[in-house]
Each structure stands twice: as C-alpha cells, then as structure tokens.
Image (cartoon, helix red, strand yellow):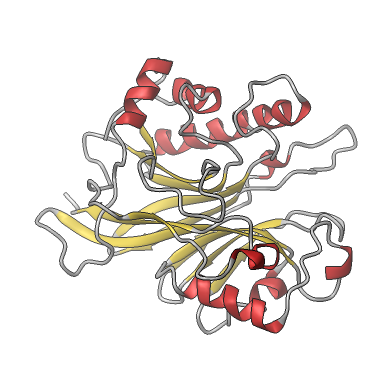
Length: 315
C-alpha cells in the first residue's frame, strides 16, 4: 500500500492512486494465505429515496416502487454477499425493513433530524453474527446553519470486531453537486466545509492507532486526475497513516458506464504493523443491476460496490 502523510503532495496522491487497487483479499478465514487473518466483505449502496411507506408521496425523490421493485432491491442486497453495508437515502429503520428482514440484518441508522420531504439518512446494516458497537454519529458532517439546524447528512460510526480484530467503519453521504469542480460554487463550498470534520475523524483514528474504513456516497470522482478534494484529504493525513481509495482500476459497469464512480470505499492503515493484507484481483467490485435500464428510476441511480477486506494475522 502506498503511503501519504501530512506533507503529501498532488504528485504523491497520483502515485498512490496509480498503485491501486490496494489492501484487499479473500473474505473469511477459509483459504487465507500464510500470515493472513479472517476477512470481511464491506459494501456501500445508495438505494435512492427509500421511504417507510407512510410519507412516500412527499419525499423529494418520489420513486413509485411496486412490491416487485422492493423484491428486486432485496435480491440486489442479498446478492452482494456482504457482511456489512453502508446504505444512503433511507428514511428510517422501517424503510430498511421493507426490503431487509430483521432475522437477516442488524440496522444502525443515523439520528439525523429532518422533515418528511428531505428524509434521507445514512444507515449501516450488518449480518447478525457480526459484533458491532454503535458510536455517536459524526453530526458535524451535517453542517449547522445559522439557526443551529443540521441540514446535511450525518456520518454513522461503528466499531467492528471479528476474529480478535477491531476496526472502525464510518458510513457517509457527502454533499452532492460538486463531482469534479473546484471550490467556488455553492455545492462545492458546502462539500469543502465537510472536510474538516472528516479529517478530524481520520486524525483521531490515527492518534488511537485504529485501522478504519470510510464507505459511502462521496459525491465526488476521487479517481479523477489531480482531484483537489482527495489531495486535500491526503495533505492533512497524519504521517504515520496510509490512506487508500479502492477500486480505481475496477471497470465501471453501472447504468451509465461513461459516468465516473462517486461511491467509494477508503481504507486507513497504520504501518509498520498494518491491519489490512494486500488485495487479490477482483476483490473490489461494482455490482450492476441484472434488470433492464427502464427500471433505474424505481431501483437506484447508483450501483452497489463491495470490497473483500482481509486482516493480517495478529502479531
């Protein structure tokens, strides 16, 4: 894994991205190579305005889904083979339960307060056997306005324990409308204001020597050459931390393959005793819908992404 630190430059970021894909591997302990510990499959899926059925008619997105559409979404999530998934644009737990039964998934959802029209929250879903400790939301990503109202989406923060290993997972959905642009327009100003709390969270994990994953809808093409948002995160990264956005070389397979991916899984690791082993080919994936394109409005305009993460063996 390439390393960037507090003095990382744009050239360093480009070198890091060119070295990707990075720290992934076979999920599960079975078949792991010597020196490898157990693994886990982490995913992210912006599920597009998933309401609870009570106020769907006032949701800003207003997707008109049938029972068959909900069944399709249930099948998409099940088909990821994931242990834990960050979801975006869900109204509440009742909305999640429309597609995911309680027996199959734990749900940890943002406590964000919002009106019915803009009822979008981040949630983390985990398989029942996975040990998950809920931590306070990263509320500061919501950017309070002059009335003290947090209008943007909070981050959901959890600690995952598996096979004697622990790591933190932050689920995010950052401000939309600034996919490649530089700061200047209003959406970009808002996105850039979300950087300080994000960098503070990363720095806190580095200070604790805690490996982490940040997964979600970044609403940003992090793989674009000289992307300024990624460069700013890299420049602020503590020197002892290695940071990597996964899947740069993975093919774009979603509805519109010409659009760049904005859903990302980012790893933070701490040498010289890294938590994450190196990747194997194909372990980062974007999952296209096995449905005709005319169903995009009632399914999602995003395709899920997953990463098979493999721990190094405890030392």
